[in-house]
Image (cartoon, rainbow, N blue to C red):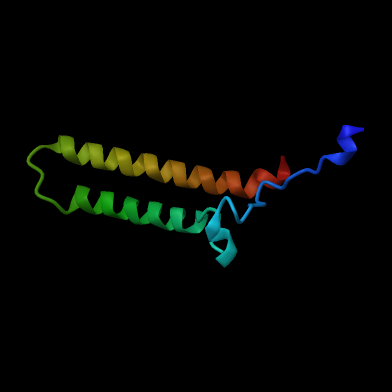
Length: 87
């Protein structure tokens, strides 16, 4: 049968000919760095919202809104990562 001859390929298996960087070990995602960068962005947005020379409150509201949205996304990703093994 053809099914017994086919090999399943892992999602993380990379052919070094297609991805030369796999030979020296760098291949894949950097989820911890993405999370750290997200929290640094949140701190920056809130710092700009409260330490700045805003003439109107519109800028402050947008900065706080984007910061809050980013906090929700970061917390949601953390919860999703922790509960993914239960599904």
